[in-house]
Length: 299
Length: 244
Image 1: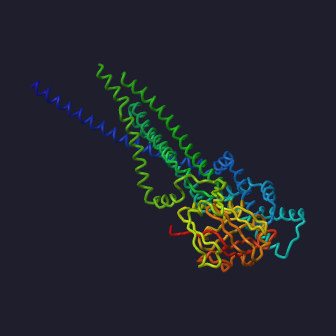
Image 2: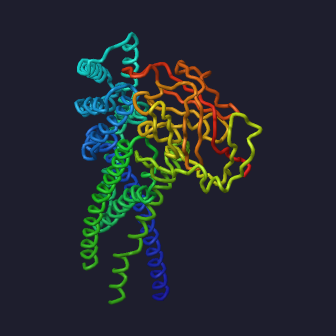
Image 3: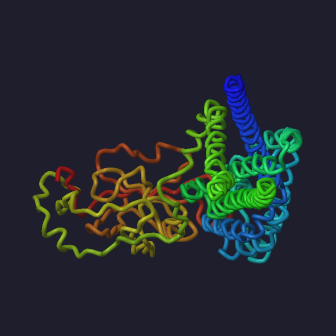
């Protein structure tokens, strides 16, 4: 009798252990899936944050321009191209140099960037440039005592139009006018998406934190989520930087090329900053996990 | 007891803590690729057009491949000399093998152009870009180089290197020295034409002819809508033998 009872008891124990193990495995899988969703949401949130502070920020491009001598380079290129034009138009070489030196290119570029981010038509305003160029030509004619012909007005107007085309080409940025409208609309959507992702991340963190009985488990799954996000955020710029593709872009001018390369390098460094934040969070979570695990197993 | 400790340690630093984040990262990119690839692939293929194999060179310096050759240089010693019976225009019909010529690339200086009567002595470039016209005169790259038996269309600014073209007269001699031979042309005509007048030149002509042009009127302030064309016929210089 007692042997039979013993056997039944052992059978019950085995079944109970089996159920517990099965339940534990299911729970582990369910929390791992939650940790994956957390990693995904944190990755998307990081991408959105990086985009918000770079591509969608007017200050970011202006800062990139300032710190990489963009204005000086544009001025130098404009001068060189204006010199070629004045060579073909009977002006002294100094005319172009003097005119470009006195022209406020910084305001012109800043206005162009501002129009891009405001959702207006991204156009280079040429009125001031034309007015100042006509004024410079007039004083040049007076200074050199040049005799004008019947065709001079037409020829000078032709010159001014060509110079204005060069100016517009130097100030404008490739494809900016095409994407301006999309950027403006996308910025509103980006705010909503970022907010939603932040809420989702908080909900998943809440579920993991409050539904786990043991603290070490909470931190374990939170650690898995943040580390997955860290890897995903760090890999994206690493692959793009290692491909070295960025440096091989074909852009018409050196200023534009430098701006493009520095702009995207800055974007990648922003990704690294966010991945650094995620790494720091992961280290903290891992430390907490180890502490609580040791505390739980020592009981 | 040590067995339990090992088991705890294994569980604490279990491989899942390393593998799972890597798996998460891989799945994230897989999901992103599956979602984005159908819509992004066409944009990605278009974006690839903006990239080249090498970094772009923004240098404003030009390459000079011009090494002056004497009238009877090594180049011409190697070439065949034939009689000039067939052509009354070309006094000395020498040839130079096409394979022995170092062809200029775009923006290369490969010769010089001299019109002594017009006080013109300038570098000759292949291509009429800003680099060429800033430093000399340039052959339009849709035309031919001297000796090729086609139209040679040379451009220059009227206020700089081609200012002397205003003194061009019929019968004056134009000398072109290149890195493969020296050429002489005789000015036959001068004409003023509209900048868009395509009848001013024939790039499909099957006989050698030199056309130099610049903006007109000379010494005028601003850009002008007319062009001053100076036409010249070949007098001497090696013909490029395209069969070798």
